Amino acid sequence: MSLRAELTVPDAVITPGEALTAHLRVWNESRIVDAYQLRLVGPPAWWPDAEPDLGQLPVYPGNHEKINIPISLPRDSELAPGPLTFAVRVASVEDPDAVAVPEADIQVGEFHDAEVEADRPRVAGALWSSNLVLVENTGNATATVRLRVAPEADDAPLAVSLRRSRLVLKPGEQARVALMTRVRNPMFTGTAANWPIVIHIEQEHAEDGSASFTHRQRPLMPKPVLKALIAVVTALVAFAVLWVSPVGGKKPKAATESAKGPTQMEAVQQEQKKEEDAKKQEEEKEKQKDEKDKKDKENVGALKKQQVQKSLVVSSRPGGKPEDSYTVPDGYRLSFKAVQLTGNGTGSLFVLVAGSQLSSQPVTNPKEVPIPETLSPKEKEKVTLKLDCQPPQTGGQSPSPGPSSSPGPTTCDATAVIVGELIPLKGPNAVEIKPPS
Image 1 (cartoon, rainbow, N blue to C red):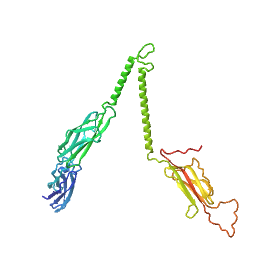
Image 2: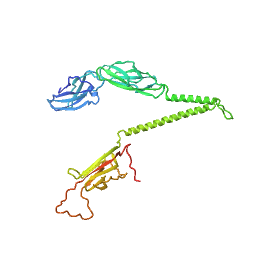
Image 3: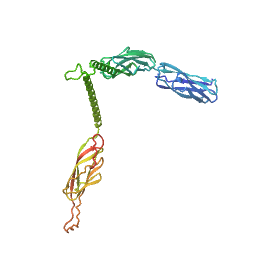
Image 4: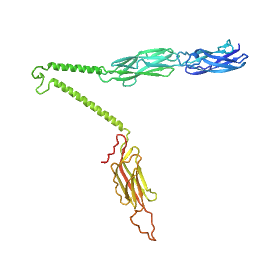
């Protein structure tokens, strides 16, 4: 025979879900160059994502070639632990009778896993309810599973019990366990309440798992039945009133009418009117409460009004600056209350708002700047105080200084105190600017 092949795998135990690499060596013992068709045989060839056809492997005469075969073990309960035999069929392309089928064993290990779920995600009852817990052993070894069930909330008025709390399941085996929920504090009337119930599973060799379902606790007297009962009682009362009321051609006189009191029919109507008025008042209170809650939510995190008192200082002295400004913060506009000026020296003061000149006054004895109501600089706009310390210019020519006199530096300074309020541009605290009348 001109063909020889050998298949080897690692000696380690491989847990399902992991991968390994098998090694195939093929010797060409003929005198010609030959190629060999390789095909995976056995369970690994049937697993998902497997490639049974491994292609061709050319080998020169008297030599051998090696190929690595990656194999991924599926995490399936049907893959039993222990040795798993597989093979590779090696067939010569030149000589159809030259075929070799080397075998190898994979040592498959155990893995433990289980799944749990409720048969119905939601059950309902005023006094009790029942459900099924579905447990499946998805591992490849026998598993012992313990079940625990309890309401998620500590104050839930429920008592939950299982028919069985311990299960021994073979690989791939499923079990159903009956579950009973009893209501300890029933409701006569009111709105139905939802109580989540959690099912826990504990395993010896695997992580714990859980599932949940909801028990809807219904009142003993549902709203439709209660409304129907009230309607029946009201109809009986109305029928009784009509029955005892006199009927005739003359003006009826109530047999049960007191000296100054209303008739029974009027009393019933008055009672119904009181109930309707009370219901409307309750609806109005709920509406006002909803509006207040909505307004409170809008006010949370919104910008609020802020009082501002900012001083702008200008000076021609050493270290001073001839211009000072205040920038309106982001999200606000500035509402002026007053701009008060004080100064010393000879020169002129200029107040600018958003780049436009608002006033021009002498440094000596300046006056408070009048502010128009519509003037309100917005975010990033500036209020600026500028100082011009040059001597004031007169209409005629000033006398020329004498030979012994020399012009000295002019010194002046001024302060502008801005008093106002920062008002948000947006949000519940924003205030629109009134247009000029």
